[in-house]
Length: 288
Image (cartoon, rainbow, N blue to C red; front, side, top):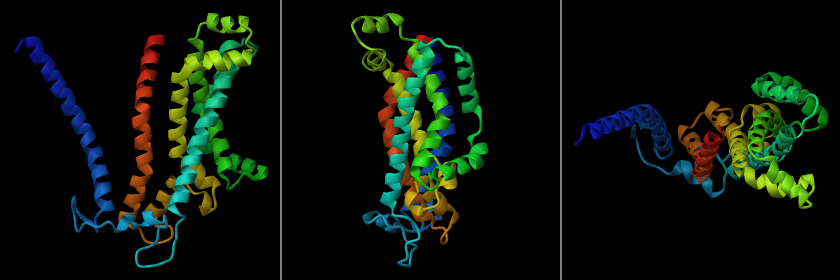
C-alpha cells in the first residue's frame, strides 16, 4: 500500500470513529425508546419481558390507562390528523406568501425596500415566546383562540421571514433576461412569475416546504398556549401529557410507543426530502 493511500485510510478511519462516538449516544436513546415500547420494563438495556400491549391502542386509536376502561386522552388518529393538517397548511402558506414577498423584494425597487429586508431579519431573530401574551389577546379578539387556524396563522407569520429570505436569494439568482422574454411574449407579470420564474426556483420552494413542514410537525409552545380543547391536540401536546402524567400516572411503554409513532412520519418525510436538501446545498454553493 502506498503512503498516500495509507494516509487516506487513516483519515477515513479517524473520521468514522469520531462519527461513531458522537452518534452512539443517539442510537442508544432510540434503542431505549424502542425497547420501552415492547417490554414490561427495563433493567438497564435488558427487557423484563416482551409484550405488544403498548401497541394495542392502534386498533381503535384510543389510549387508556392500563387496568381501566376510561379514556383520558384524545383519539390517536384525530391527533395524527391535526398534526398533519397543521404541518401541511403551514408549509403550503409559507411557500405562497414567501414566494410572493420574496419575488417583490427581489424584482421591485421601491422606497423602504432595504428597511423591510432589515425588519424581516429582526422579526426572525425576535424570540416568539415573548409575544405569547400579545398573541393570546389578538387571537382571542379575532375568535381564533382554541383553533388550529389561530396556531397556523401565528406560525406562518413568525416563520415567514426566513422563507422570504430563502426565496429572495433564489429569485436574485434568476437573470432578468428570462423574465423579460416572457413579458415580451405576452405574459403578464403574474403569469411570468408563475409559469417562468417559479419552475426555476424549485429548490427554494422545497427548502421552504421542508422547513415549514418540520416546524409545523414539531410545534409545541403555541399549541400548548393557544389550544384548550383536546380535540385540537397535536402529537407534541399528547406526548407532553403522557410524559408529565397529566391525567394519570406515567406509563413509559405507552409514552415510548406514541413517541415512535410521532417520529415515523418525520423519518419518512426526511428520507423523501434528503435528495432535495442535497440539491439545495449544491445550488447554494453554485450561487455563492
